[in-house]
Image 1 (tube, rainbow, N blue to C red):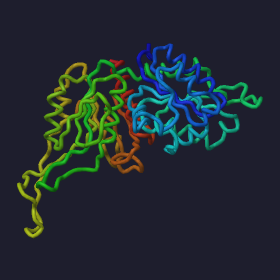
Image 2 (image 1 turned 90 degrees about the vertical axis):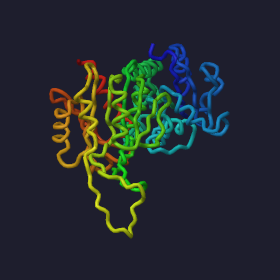
Image 3 (image 1 turned 120 degrees about the horizontal axis):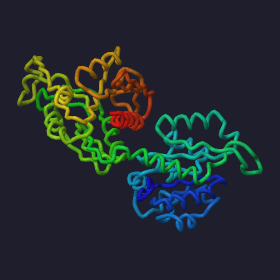
Length: 398
């Protein structure tokens, strides 16, 4: 049922186990998936593209350069509900982990925001090498599902760990990932992203360094898990297909956009970095240096999160973010209780690689009954996945 109607990109790389991928392709199709095979040039040394074309929903693709569309990797990546690589060689693992886009398969893996399942297969010595294991751990931290190789006969008469998992186990893993990613189906999710800009004059503003990457990752992940998503954002970053995007600039504009949609939302995730203060008076024309140093008097902006907490309707889940320095957890715990939140995501923006402008983040999720979950430094999409796992768990527990 989880596979029915889902678009699955099946990546096949150049190992002797590539012949097993034909059965994986067939079983995915039997489960109702629409399979798009992508074969590396090395895979073609072991299996033929025509075989996969005959079994799959559409012709197999083998190159970045002979596709009908100009960017086949982005087309495949954007429309995929899941990408599975079986077998995944040491080369593909390394290329994916380090972002080395040297063929259509790795380019698709880098271009997609869909969940990814990777099924390694290689000789025992290669599988156990520190380099391969480091790449596997990197992918795990980023949220990639790894289907571990089994033990048995390998190429050349060897026996050991490194044998590709059985096709039925690979398909079961794909179905489990897809089933898990639909846990927000039927819910209306409102996400805010980016830092607000509070104008001083037509040129200058009071703001912060928020890029909106974490909020956008949350919106995209919620949409991938079946939710109807509205994203209120201050940035021009693209959003996943199907996400309603509302662009704002100031805290007041964000408050209006959120307030008009809050009652209809099942989940609200306030990931935006809303300015706490704004200039009390905004100059109509650019302030000139020749006129001397201006005196900018600040006043508080609307506390959007506190307002949502005060009027939260029954059944709604409200998630706040706390970008802090110093004692991050204590500050977030205070905010959790003081603003009537269900969950809060705290991050130390002074920590290396975390917080504003980075592609990675390191957070602590706090909830009721002293619930605490520490999320190590991870890709922001992986952090979004963990945050929404906590949301789904909180809603189930009510």
